Length: 266
Length: 271
Image 1 (cartoon, rainbow over the protein chains, first blue to last red):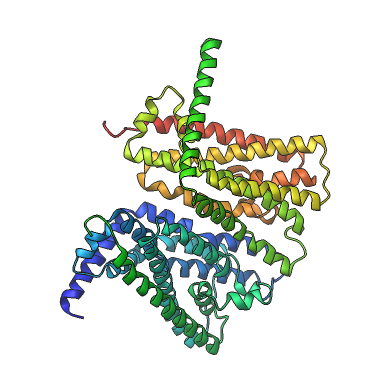
Image 2 (image 1 turned 180 degrees about the vertical axis):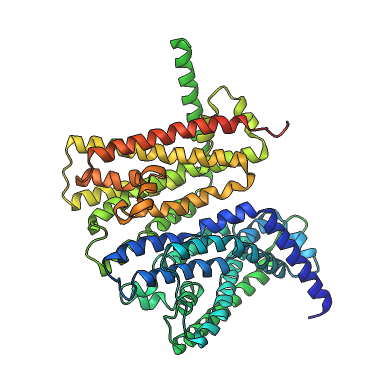
């Protein structure tokens, strides 16, 4: 990468950090609005008071949902809403004129909010850690090492999915509404409300190969030590397969979409 | 105020409500795809939230004392509450927040009607009523399945807790609106409320200790979903009924008072 490109990306990063800092209150509320795993924690903890459910006891649920909260905070992006409105209002034209690819712009903006978001989420996580039995992280060093790429891939998978759906705004007026459908399926199938391993047989096996689970449930289970090294490698492979598939769709939608793009002055 | 003037004030408010509803209806009919994007998706979302309950039945024979059909009954009441939130409370609060932010609330304040009434009817999304209608359907199916034959007293109790639940929901909406006078970036408070509504999926008997108190007396999800179901099944006593009405009155009066103070702090776009 040339130094000019690094400088441009650095500028975008600083811009993104400044924007996140300016909207810190709304960022905090977004953090609080994604505390669904903590709500689930309370409920499942209460249900498990009279004995374990499946292979989860109370401490197991604590670990699972705290990890789910953390992974969700680290893997979140919002490019679908930005892209949707930029295409609809024509603001994308200005981005296309810049010397950086618009997708690089969105990547930097989404990443730049992560440090502040983490800082805002940390107190919430700490309170929950103290109020519950805490989290027990995997003792297997290989699984722990693999958890890092697993979370990174989860972020990539969320970003590319949003990019692919956001690109539909080139043809549709309400592409962001379609993302609601996706996130609805995600909430149920990713292990956001309940670990997918507790699903009835048959459904559980199907849910665990879908991209939703690859984007949340898999890194969470890896982090809290519920997967063997072989299962971990398998999961990473599945994540990569979904990344290639979703990435190809996003790239195709972006190229075709730009040709169909008919904003003012484009 | 004389009786004649009062009557005129009431009819003015009713005309306002009618006009705002009609406008929202016409807009909704223009965007018929909203049936899918708001109605069906909203319903799927709410039903998705029920999945954990039924996963719990895979491993248990009851959830905190509630059987499967009793939970279907509770889910029906949840859909009614969530449908009213999505079709009436959330759109009106969001629209009014935008007006506060842009300063166009000035025009609302100039109207010869109560400003809060104006704000609470600012927008209505009829497609989301699909959720509430499904809820009513589920309640009826579950009542038939459980072979319930509620007495007049039970139906009366149901009416009281249902109205209390809806009034507290609106009062919480007013409080969110008041908060947005203070900080303009509080627009997404309505999403936070949507997340919190997730608690209302579950019977109140799941919760223990401080959370139980919070969901009974502060953010009374118990009044919204558990109590209506209990009133039909027959597990709702006088203490709960009085508690529900008391909590609702406190919330409604508190919201009205805080609204008055928040409005006095509004500086409008021009000043």
